[in-house]
Picture (spheres, rainbow, N blue to C red):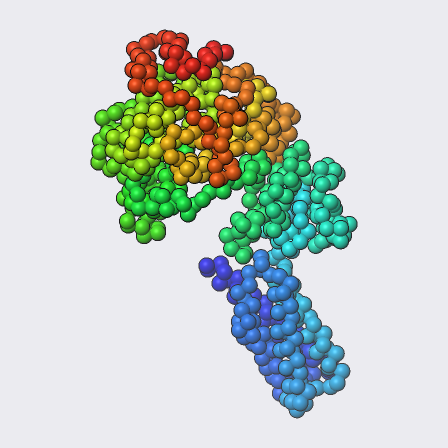
Length: 621
């Protein structure tokens, strides 16, 4: 704050000196040689005139808030304001020179020449002093020790101009815009803000190579998402970092000038899932909702989204205290900020495989809706600890489903996985068993509607491949993938939670909901895009190496047992798998519980395979 005051005082001082000095200059060509040649009265008159001229400038600049304009934001429009004010003051002062008697203020007609020069020079120098800091910043950037980033801007329009100004005059910004690209034939071949405009955008790879571009900034505010995806696809083979200005739908206000990184949602060119928020709000508002696994990636996002529906009671249940405490504190802060006092937030620690603990919670809170996200999900780790996978993913699900029926919950939704389809690993097999449990209780229960939601890999979740790749890139490589042929379906955490909540609406009993996730993604392509996003060259700057498939890992994941047996819901992205014949579960639960007595992992897997007939045991290393 003090710095701003000192800067303002400095401008006042410089303005005063300029106006006063050129007030004196006005009488330079008056026909009298030297200031001392004027009479004492005339000297006083000239000094008073110059002082008044300086005072008028300062007063009018304060009135029109010129001193409130930061030099970093000083624009052509602001310069025009300064020029007009200065010219008006000079013109208003002219009658004083002409009509005040010569014995007080000396006048000859040739003096008008020096008055004109003084009028123009005051305006020019007052504008120049305000542009000077920006010009010094630009010069400093051009002469600076750090090498500027050769940058291409897509979009030769108003947003592109904002980007150029930011790159030129923000001393913290290291970009040097060397070329712009646009599709408008009237702009291609021209000059925009002293920068050549090339095009069309479809030729961008050639332009990047020719100008040796290191970073691309997409600066088209009214860009449609499908066109953004097309542009990103054109950039996918170039080793450049990519940033973009917010789309109109993402802007946080009319003056939003952020440059944001292109995230994996953009790079994977995914269309967002449309969520029927109004119906979900109607379903959960004022109800008691239980989320198991509330501290996990999916569970914590479920908690955030459910909190927005304003339930009466929100119960967070997890075995891991640290992350559960984090999401609890996040919601407590939000309740304090929004002054929310009518939501009861309950955070409980415990395990779903502890039936007594689960019943205590159901008996006390009697949840209306249960979202069961508690599970072990890491494929290789579960291969080495299959009994624990059974304990949590199977027995834990059975306990929660049993209590949902006993205490008459309205709905229970299980978070499942694509790995439950023809499973080749313990994690997938146990999740398939969990789906069978849901379908069993759906057939038996007269109180509760049960459903499962099956989806692919979640970007950014704990243990997912993306954070691993980013850490490996930051460390200088190599990036490790199990097999260069491997493909996966991907979705973001918000997409996954949108699907789960949406399916809670559709659930009537025993459905397995599947998301139409579009085309699967090659993990190799994902790794290469992340390396390029870091401005590096795959297999040159960062090596990509294969480590071999891990135990239970597939080359290809499936979302449906039979793609012909599916029914589309009212949401075009969500399908329902046709129900199979329901198998008795209680006997299988007793059988699978024997796994806790076995010491050999192979025996546990064999026991699991005896219950899940689609499970194929693999021991690849």
